[in-house]
Image (cartoon, rainbow, N blue to C red):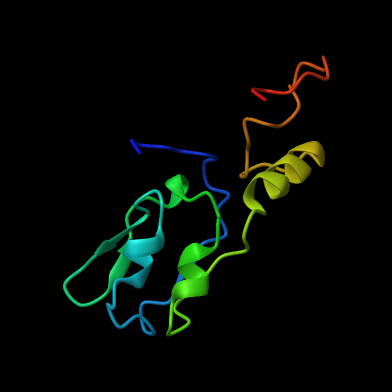
Length: 104
């Protein structure tokens, strides 16, 4: 799939490079090529393409990856409704008071 981006800066995906052995299992199971192989381990190449399915975390035999499957959008919507910034989501309510959602 080509350059999919779900929500900017809300993904809960974390990679502990100290635990990563470079086995590449996450590369095999990630549907959106979020990871890439570095010289000795995996790195996150496109965090915003992560849809938080959790496949990488569930399949990492070394516990190097953590992600709270499916919470990114909900977190962004709640923070937007509470007036918090920094986790905007296209699904949040319009700021013009119309009550319409931004894109959904």
